[in-house]
Length: 210
Figure 1 (cartoon, one colour):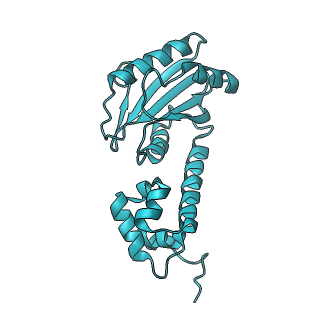
Figure 2: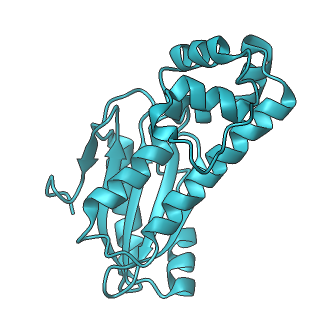
Figure 3: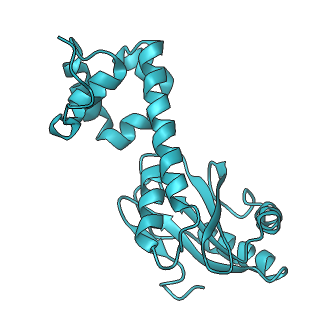
């Protein structure tokens, strides 16, 4: 019997059951979904899993993997849309929730920039690059160029530490100062640099570095 999707309370289903439905394996594949959640350490990490690993190790079909990637992309876009035109300083929890969802399961470092207007409302969210964050890999002119294009007057930058520690490295301090100086030349303020570790943030502004 086909379930009426409009009347079904999906909140009553487990993450494994929902995942099995999304993967198109609900009839026989709940144990696959449970195993996948256990191996990855949670739903967020499942959505960030490498496609080759999902196919080779878990045995998911290309169609199931594509379904997973689609829901991951939709989730990311919805979270980003929720940030637009929100006062980032008055809603720090929303900003951190977005960054956590986007960055917490990433296996590589991602450098993200939030461009704010004069009322600190988010104009644009941009992932500048993925890889090791250091002074050589960050190009402040790209941040400045985008800021001028969208009319930003304030900036928040953020990146994650896949190692789990939220404590900033010497390279993080150098990057922060490099970006701050570049933005200052065009009268744009760097409000904060957030470093995400395992479930916690380090704020350069709160620590007195900005």
